[in-house]
Length: 75
Image (cartoon, rainbow, N blue to C red; front, side, top):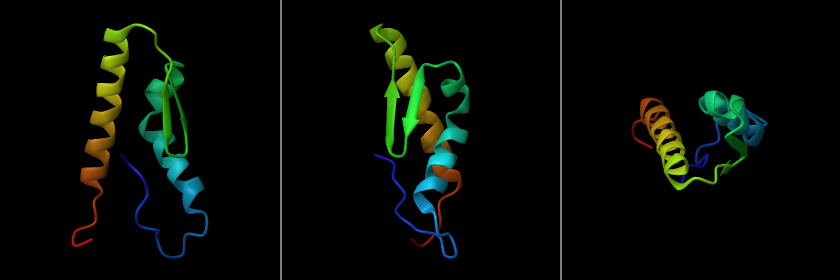
């Protein structure tokens, strides 16, 4: 759903920078050990369905807000 589609000029390590960006966005959830991220995979380690749905909603909201705020016009 979310992946780096624009490689920034003068940035030679785009996948690593994308991983750092995702880690920063999801830092609160990663610190609670509910979520693990690896490049373009986000793993939610919750067994209860309601809690899982809540965390997925939080992740989706965080990603949508960040990517909409940082979108590049005209691309």
